[in-house]
Length: 474
Image 1 (cartoon, rainbow, N blue to C red):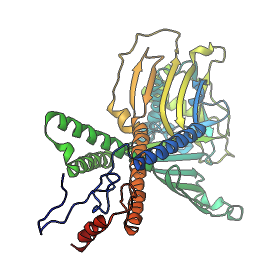
Image 2 (spheres, rainbow, N blue to C red):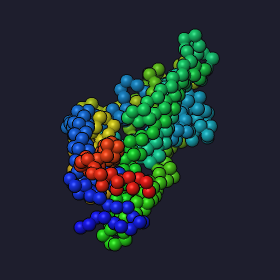
Image 3 (cartoon, one colour):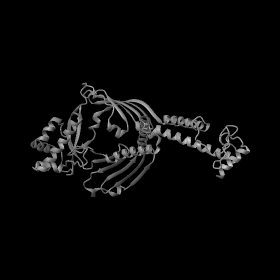
């Protein structure tokens, strides 16, 4: 075939006598997959991935253990009194019953009576929420000094664990603030920053005037955000593949793929911002300060809360614990008493864990089996569930639940984290391929300067030099 072209509008095309390539081409980096530049880039990527996998395995954890928990420890303590709120501890506005308010009940104050009955009913409701609290004999009440520690905690979440804002306050409720010796306390402020594995900002300070500690913490879990973006990219690829199968041809339009990724990600972001979660916790403890009343069962306590006369007699009994020498600002405390002779299996739980994690904050797969049989009786199996939007939203995982209600088992596959690893390796492969083309382009540039074929480095003939010069001149 004659490659000479006599037309004045087009330059002459000359083939390399060694490889047959067009000597007039100055740059050609779009090579076949079997070209050495792409093979070398793929080999380097493969060793890089193997090295990263070995590193992740070395810092990761794969363990199986069984944990036994005595559930009653989460409810009461034999060593400390817990202050009794007017309402459940989940409400940060909960107040606490004082000795002065119980004195007003004895004097016939209707408003104080409402507070007393609400306080007792809160204890009943908490016990019923715990399904009767296995092994609970009852509650002993006493008076607690006003220097009890009150802990407030408010947590706001956006997109499960995308962004977490946590506010803590530890208040030492000393009602006579002037009694604090400022010489023994120092105001302080600490600011902490962390970048890995999450970005977090924490500010803590101490206020001696109010005898309180405060903590404000903002955490941005950028690995989770990148994981959600990776899921959106995978979904976009699937949409392109489906579009190719049905003949839409979206796979040939890169802008359409990018648009799908952006729409999916901003949809997830909007869902995270528009559906924040807010949780509040309040707890308080104090050392013993007075003797305690005899044990009152939950049934007896329910009757006292419903009957104003019984509530007034109960206040009289509590007031009898106080002496005139004690401060009038004492608060009501409670101690939950359990039957020590009861079978341990009636108030103990057991959890069996099987976890695969990278570090301690990047779970991949987790399996948990929990056992809790408070009365020694079995229950029917719960209906297996494969998918729950709440779990996907909060944990970025697909879960499967099965087994009895009192001994459930579940497995979680954290697809957001797995997708992040897979997509990251894909983009690293793209980077290595791009780097291979960049190196190949520089090699071809040097061959052009040396007047050689960019494909095989064969010296150009005089005819090839003329053909390449005519291309450059145009």
